[in-house]
Image (cartoon, rainbow, N blue to C red; front, side, top):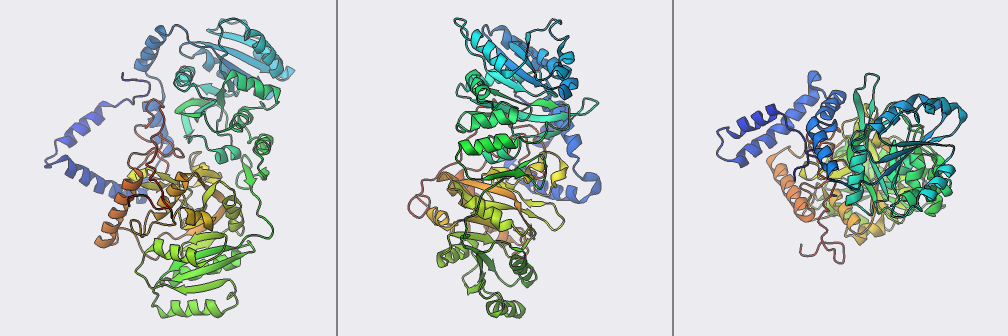
Length: 637
């Protein structure tokens, strides 16, 4: 059955354009697709350079919301027909904790609950202080589709819930903890009940969100990933509401860990990540600029329950966020920084100098892999490093094999004996002195595979802040060319979080883990995408790849070897590598759990996806997982 709630609406002009395009005088659809594929990146490059074509994310999101977010008449009628055949719609308890300073937002929040299609709710307002009573005085005297109950504390709510639960043949309702100042989408409760019916194992539900301005216009969306523990520790990932089973909510109340949505979501997540469900629809609209800072006490309790030795502090990048700092042992383990190069003195010298002068980490060495340099100035500089004041930190190895980035790094890793390695491009420049401390802290966590850094272009925009797989059929950088101030989606680059992959332009990991999965792919991926393949092999072995924004460096991307489209030979080699990665891992059409189906897979700047790839929330297709044999190579290759 076609479901108009989750099927995007297609406007008439789009259908006419597609029909006209299909009648173009080309002999086959393949040629039409090939021409469109070549024209798309050219037009994207033109748009980035023309001032009148620059991206207006605010206007684009409003167009997206009008087409895919708001409920149409057809969708409303369809839901009403479904509800007519639903004889036993479960009741959902909606709990609002109200303080005096939040009273002005209560009316909008309660109205959005009352306007839910299908009813089936009971609203509990927990009045936390006497100053909030005037805002609640008239609510119980007005007729509502559901029941509204005022209580003085969560303990009183818990007692009344326990009394209600002894009624025979009455199932225990799920509980939504809703923040004042948040309006629910008219379909929110219906979609939540529908999802709970499909996912009876769900222990936590949360959704995407946006903000409403004074004129009621939707703006500044936050399109969220699947549950991401590192991200949830640094910010309130659930947002303005979360839905949990009644028994779980009661347990949180008795443990005094229900101070807000952030605290409740971390209480549930501390028992395991199974059943934490993300609804990729914008179901919450915030009337204020934010819900306050992340709950540092809740983060500390989560770490204690998980027996994790880490310190909690306010993020220096944003005081609304939390930074979880993982310790580095004393003495610090040695890290070998591997830097392949061929000539390129104009980028190599700043790279090495910045590492030597701006790295606070006490125990590291640099291995420069000279892959056939013949420039006299470069050779003189390399010789000076080996005999200069940093001779105890810098070693130069000559390796004249034909350029193969994977093989050069694999041979260098086999040569060193440090417990930690760092793959570093020769066009990197250090910005923050403590970049290596933070990366090593994450790399030493037992479940960590690779750790990536926040890399900036020279103009200050993002070059790397994590890699999402499936972008363009292969992989792409998350929020590339953006700045954290361009919206809440772009501001995710300021959070420590897990990604499917991170770039090897600056990657730290344990040497034993690198060797366990067989290192970088030498035959199929000699130049590009070998870091993505490495990270996917790590995930297949159960490791997590993490990104930290506190390791900050510049990256002059491909400054030595040039772009992949520089000549036909490079284009042919790049096409082979794309085909290899797609064949091994099935990246074509993959929906990365650390991205969002509401974000574009053709533009790395965080554009909205037209249409969104939400479906019926039935889950995501897993990547191929080639069986790994000894040495980490895929069987049969």
